[in-house]
Amino acid sequence: MSGTATLRATAGAGVPDTPACRHDTRHEYLLEGHGPLAQTGVLLIHGLTGTPNEMRLLAKGLHRAGFTVLAVQLAGHCGTQDDLIATRWQDWVASVRRGADRLVRHTGQPIVVCGLSMGALLALALAIERPAQVAGVVALSTTFRYDGWSMPAYTRLAFLLPLFRALGIGRRSVFMEAPPYGIKDEALRERVVAQMHSGDSAAAGLPGNPWWSVIELRALSAHVRRNLDAVRAPCLVMHARHDDIAAAGNAQDIVRGVRHAPVELVLLDDSYHMITIDRDRRTVLARTVAFAEAVAKRRAEGTAP
Image (tube, rainbow, N blue to C red; front, side, top):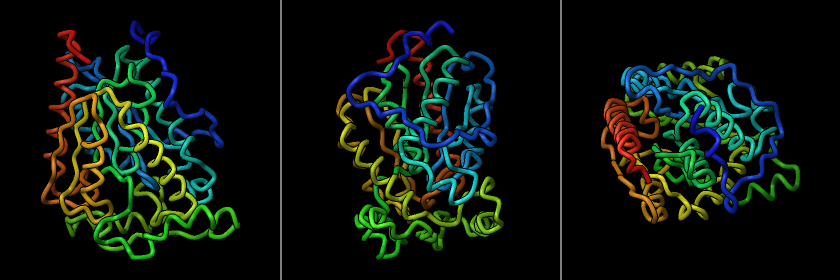
């Protein structure tokens, strides 16, 4: 495509491309756009232990609006706990790079990157590393820290986990998710929890966060927070005011850290962490569509940053 040759990684804040695993893509999907927005691609990134399925409603809504959408599958996900703990945060970044390159080849234009929870960190990581490839960032329920109101006290000791791994302790240990599981809507919560415990990790993800994977999330978080000042793409940040997994202060970190691009913060009042499927999902979709339309309009008018 015409724009692909100019979309290259920048030096400085890049992440080494050293994947430790094979990238499984069986559960990711590409939805062809239509109409004037077809050349605007939106890359959707799920969270830690999650699946592309958690982005399905957002993907369908964006596609109905005309956008070309790719929901990426992160390395080590949609499989077993062993599959996940065999990966490092650099592998997840490599998955996002691969998805971005595929989408850019398809549209020939810079893309909007939209991530949920850890996926928001990965969206920001791509914007930091590849400013020419990312035209906009949507950060949903950003999780720099597990500090929401439902998190058990022992998660505050996560800073000890690298020591445990160095000593060979905790390879099989997990932080089990607990009610309300990121979902305020009780009927929806019941269905999702049943899927989580069904043994089909491709449907609703794993029921807990392995200790060693949390170590990787914390390393990714540190990398992104150090480099937020390198983000040059406009950002839409949406977060539940009463997020049970990651407090709203995580969203404020983006507002404070991104200094060279506009940041719009939207706080939601009727959801918990999983805002793409919870009670505010229509608001999340509408604001994301409007943001992506604005990105496409600026590009068409030649005023994109």
